[in-house]
Image 1 (cartoon, rainbow, N blue to C red):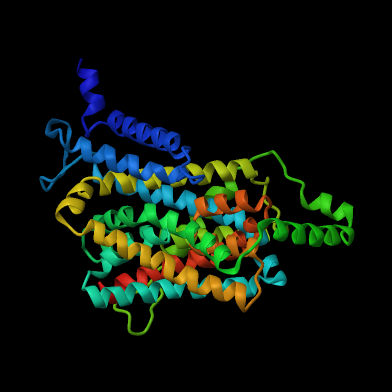
Image 2 (tube, one colour):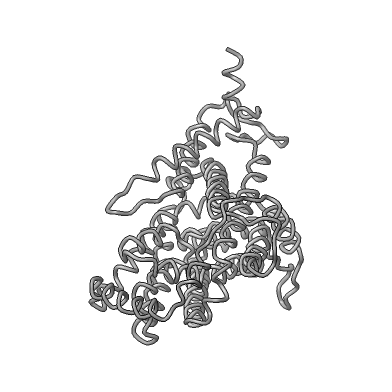
Length: 416
């Protein structure tokens, strides 16, 4: 039965593939379960990874021993590579998705939405810094809590990379992220619901107003032009994907020196590919690629990437997760995450609806996009019954993602 042992022991390639396949497949399956109409989707992979790592650590004979004598459920060097590669695939695919409509959106209220999203981003940063000084909790832990509270995995990856480059163990960020993530998802959706209650918004009335507006717009649109816009090729091509990733990694590695910051800031393996992908998506109609990238290929790229990333974060954080809850301040971190989630969204969201007169469906998407939260977008689209939230989401997502990545790094470099 030596072949069974090879699959179970952490030093074999078969073991690593087996663990990833188990964590991702079970996480996706459990993520489809809805509680009160809300599901965690792909993000449940994170929690399966935590559970697998925690219980796997209870069997010493199955652990991988690194060069320094440390014991792990899976080789940490492998996890580091797969985590970063998965992150690259995810943000690159997201950039390709939202790129085509990014600049166009600024012509129809996009600038206003992005300014509101920026306000949400920096409000969360200010709340995080304030809590850091009030409680004395280290900034790496606070950045992990922040990333989970606003459900931003690329920001977490960028912060972990920056902290690791400073010579520290970055696993604590993943643990803090995992603590605050579940209520982060719920809190974002809750903020959308609270705003509706505060202003007594009638969903059916909003739908009726939207229907009238869309009818008027269709009457002024050239049918031939509309048909041209929705044409999508079914022929995939891999060259643009890997050339884009190549350029993105190069761009993300360029150091940017900011006065007063001890180390240079980089777009990193998350920000670089994202910027390149947005530009490629936006300029795709003008630049003739050898062959188009299909929507289904981009979607597959995105889902595979986020699954690999979340599985790695879970497998790394799981080694200390339960210990942090029992002997540490895990539950306190969860409470701080709720504050970071709700305060910026409720303040800016209320201001956006009451002062800037952003319609509720667009506001739902803007809130989801400003927190880069797919489950919140899914809830918003289901509640609205139309794609208006998706437009608001796509309008603010690229800039928000860029800012989340950069601010997470800056918090580490300035305060760690």
